[in-house]
Amino acid sequence: MRTIERSPEIRARLVDLDTRLREMDTLGPNMAVLSLNPPGVQPYPAADAVPLAREFNDALAAIVRRRPDRFGGLATVAPQDPVAAADEVERAMGPLALHGIMINSHTGGQYLDEPRFAPLLEAAQANRAPIYLHPRAPSMLAAYRDYGLPGAIWGYQAEAGLHAMRLILSGTLDRYPGLTVVLGHLGEGIPYWLHRIDNRHAFATSTAGAATPIPPLSLTPSEYFRRNFVITTSGIDDPDVLELAVRAVGADNIMFAIDTPYEDSATALAFLRDAPLSSAHRAAIGHRTAERVFGIAPATPVNPRAFTVPRP
Image: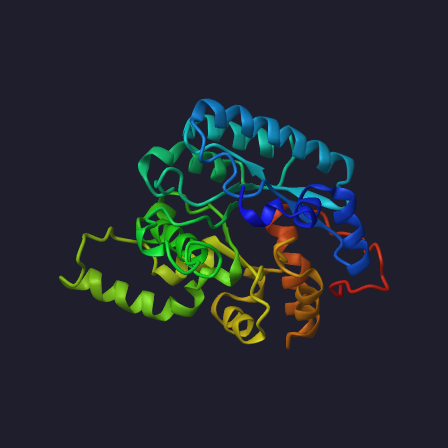
């Protein structure tokens, strides 16, 4: 457990759902999508991780069944055992009626583009399970050990961005064209780099410019990003970065997120309310993208006097 989670206030906001609902009622968000805190079950041996994932998902599904008007849920899986993970994806999206899965980036230093994870990706595509690719500390820690670099200052987004780029450049998304991957923090920096990524990928594949072999792709990297990825606003309450993201991927590929309890909910909500967006873009980011991607029914405002995302 990280030091921050030892704080009684943070722990209460993580696990006390009554506290969570009171905050939502006060500030205005109608629905929260719940998940297991990273790194989930991924650090454990498969023999332990598989039953732990099932136990967590059963508990999460019970919470969602009690309050489907307020909570959605992202299942956890154990990629250490890709076949068992595939079975759990099917169970989560079927009998448990959850809304996707969360994978906390690498598992033992291995990434989802590697062939051993094919059963997991096949199940995610077949069951229309969006994969929220959540950051964790980088697998190659040596250069990140100092100055707080392994965490959210830099290492988290660098790690998740690396994982996403591996999925794109490996050709994985040609094999699984129906896969949906969700990235936080307005795309972990990738929208900022899309033009250069396309430019350098074209150079590397048309000449001897690549240091290592690059598989042939059916689309440009940016086309995969726009087709297969959805990004959230979590932790990036910056209107300039949001404007760039809207231009890069479109408002229909962006969803509002707070990253409770690590970010301030009131600040995030004020950001969405005040960002220079059209009403259509604000509605897409505020609720419509999440409803489409996670299969969540439109919420009914609980506290109309508090801030809620406008609905036409």
